[in-house]
Length: 342
Image (cartoon, rainbow, N blue to C red; front, top):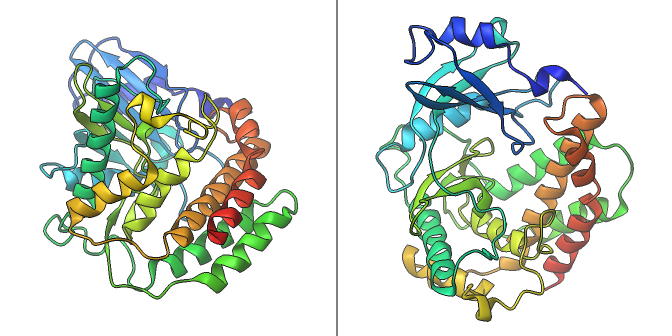
């Protein structure tokens, strides 16, 4: 395990931020967040307020992965839109400071929901949180990327063709053993690729309830976090990602809603969530949704394989959890095959 992933050089942080941000001319506290498998994330507690520092992990990394510069850029661009984000402060791309690139943003106070069952809330509040999640997602997909300076944030062309090729390459680069279901899923997705319908906009890439901060009281979203996988692409990728997560088992590991009586809890069905999203975007419906859902399972399997590879290489942010997550790759592949069959 790399101790560099688990800690920050306080003196280096202080020297760089002193004079650039208030609060670093005196003592401050550093606390590592347990979440954030990809990019190690730290709370910086100062007398002037709290900040968050998010950095690339040290060591040899997959090409184009851990793009903290892109995270910084997209959140800075979204300031003032209907998509809530934290305030960005500084981006440092000089690896000599901490050993890898990093950025600093405001710490957003609020509630982070890791279990979509939301056991501590009543049915009305649960419905409100889910509706807010739906509203923010549709708002994201209606952002004018040219107006906020992100027209060049992703390449042109068929997003799903590009993403399938990219994640297949990433998966192969981090493969630790042959997983027949993943190989079968890759081939099946290539054959089932739908025609490009021309939709193109900003996508988050990992839109889930646990990547959001909600108000401590009420159901308003205060910030969407973890923009590492964001790009210009097809909006259905984000929507399918939400539905994919809900197919997982409930609890700390799956963080899903499989087998849950959603009606009793005030939670929307998959179809109701999709219909609300379509209504907000003025869509009549979505064809080939099974493909988009299947692709989401495939990509998440590829992400988890990368997490496992980093753990084995000693570069994981939370090594024990990383190894555990890596064991889910075949499960995601089987789920992807099932979704495509439907």
